[in-house]
Image (cartoon, rainbow, N blue to C red; front, side):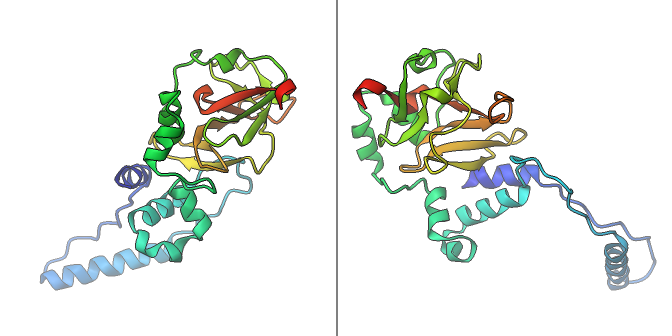
Length: 228
């Protein structure tokens, strides 16, 4: 919560009110003059008009601010978001396990736990799934939810398994990610267990969706078509 609030505060601009002219007299009189000057400046300032168009994945600081407030003040959660929204913030899906249970479930590949539950990122070109070219389906390593079809996979050259679309719009959820202050991103999670998969960017194949779902191989498993 502290990290989220710090990121939000760093990204917000604080505008100081206009400085009033100096006047002689008591401190109360100077404060009154400053208050009137600030009020007049506010009335004279034109309203900010929203942009006519907004890119699909442009992130708004207000979203981050609201998210940070909800995280910092869980007692007020009902005032800011639904139970479903709060579950996303807590990384709780329909498949819900304790941290100890997740560790035990993913014990065969400890790094899968670090990626899915702790948002770690694997080294590029380190996952065998990056070179997987067989026909089949990529599923969540945590809950076996089908995430991506092999037909949507392509070689992005980044070293991470990449896809131009998920197998279904209900298979994944996309969440604003402000973990890097000056580089807001969109995190991709498994919709069923809320496990971290990677991020989605707008530099994918232009003849497809234009999107690049850049996934961690450790967050997924591949099931060949013949065993589905």
